[in-house]
Amino acid sequence: MTASPDRGRLLRTGRTIARVLLTWSIAAGALVALDAWLSGFAMSDWWHPWVAALLLGLLTAGVWPLVLRVALPLAVFTLGVGGFLLLGAGVLAVFLAIPGVEVHSFKTSVVVAVAMAAVSGLVNSALAVDEDEVFFRRARRQAAAAATPDRLRRGCCSCRSTGCRTRPRAAPCATGRCRRWPPGCGRAATC
Image (cartoon, rainbow, N blue to C red):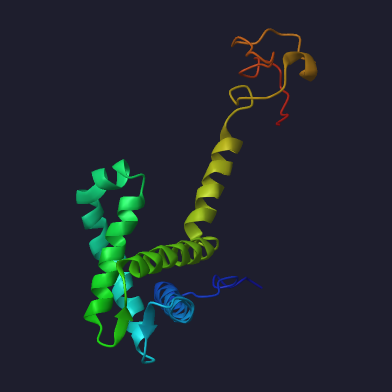
């Protein structure tokens, strides 16, 4: 009996669509929570958070990288605060474009921008835990480490602890440990 290639995969097709929909719904939920929490921010209809989350996603994915390329010196000079202020201005513009969404001050839009950036970072890091790229990157590193001969691998054992009587090819480091395995040692110990 052979194992099916689909085994162990939750979403075979439509993974990107499912990820976008999940991110969009969590962003809309965060906007609903911010509506209840902030006094200067109000969304009166049920569709306002969904449209605002969609427009904010388009802003941060498409327009924001281009704006930040131009405004990078401002963001660096202000230690990142200028970037959040620019993003707050973009959030304010998006909210003013949606009829019925009320934002009473620029400070409120900056708070919403920072909160949405935090939610987006948390969601993206949580979704990246199960990504194939992370798995395959780790597998490539482990395969490369296993393919490296022991005498060329940087070790943490001194020649005295391995019992090897030959001199190391590289000079010992400050801790008295060999930088490379000595030739003929044959010991495959790792830290």
